[in-house]
Picture 1 (cartoon, helix red, strand yellow):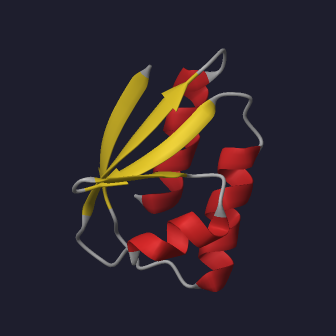
Picture 2: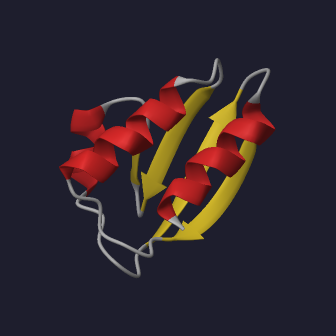
Length: 80
């Protein structure tokens, strides 16, 4: 498993949240995003929106699977 901590640069509106989910969904790995004590599926739009991400928040991207390194990099790049 790979973990990568990222500072959110721009709050995600609906379109950006959908792009984030599309990016996470293109990987075979399980991809999750953690904020404080909440860990959600990064491939679910509803889960992502439930986090209420805004500028300056620190989140952790977790990826586990055959393409985990690339998944963590690309998903983190969408936020940061």
